[in-house]
Length: 390
Ligand code: DHB
Image 1 (spheres, protein in one colour):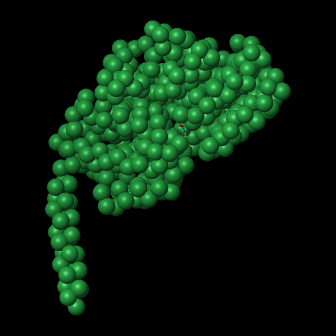
Image 2 (cartoon, protein in one colour; image 1 turned 135 degrees about the vertical axis):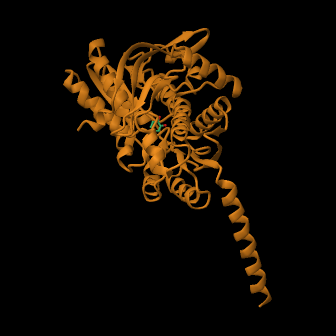
Image 3 (cartoon, protein in one colour; image 1 turned 90 degrees about the vertical axis):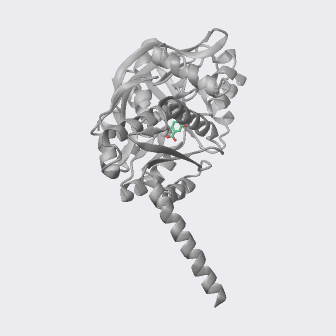
């Protein structure tokens, strides 16, 4: 009996506490940022969190009279965890926006929660084409693998690369990269003689690379997620693939700016296609890189950082337009059609698809000022996701 009275008192106390919290909440705007801060994709989380905090430091934490509250959660690169965290953020914290999503399965696992709760879900990293179709509340500020892969398949045959082996991580973005690269290369008169897939978790590239050596293609096209590129590069060089006359090409995920500078001279000359390079020669990017490095002990921002930075901008601008009124639907409407100059170059959020339209650059690894960079040498302007056109 006594116990029950005590429990009731506790329940009352909690109820009054949380009602005060709700009152205080009236003037705050909460962003639930779910990222892989540990586990295989931890570099993605580190980059995006740093970029989101930089954006807030530069633009203030009060927008349209609302105090911005950033709640960062670590999903440990486990999609079930992403989903559970999203649920808690929506139900308990009453976040206005869900953001982050380091890998495709995490973004997809969260989509039903965004739909049911009418909460905008800003995908800052994951890049499988179909993600934006999983919920009408998803807006993407990263890129898509078809965007990057098609542009490289247009470049390759014009540059002596006709016979290619593809090697991708065996999940959404890898399968997109393989499919769109292959289709376009064949269309352009080239051929893909073998398509290899490696597991996402703890891949061993050695047996696959041996196979590639035996096949003697002009080039090996690779997609692995951010953070895994250095291992591919190391084994590619250790096996003397370059000396056997096989070129390494791929989407810019393999020459990730977060790791590139440590890959060594073996990376020199590798051509990739992507939407962002730390070396992108614009005033907006130079300012971004300088501020990012200053705030993060010299850490180089990579394409994940720029997805996080631009995602915060999309959220801030939508809040300015709606002044925090109208809930998730109004916010989402204000995200659609945004157009601005990002550190990556011009970008806009296609109002129909809620996906990013942006330039794709061809880049070559070069040493500049003593450091390795992806140096842009060509640009394909305003590329829509080719995955949406079918
Ligand atoms: C995805 C993850 C990455 O790290 C990347 O570079 C590209 C795509 C993804 O899971 O969608």
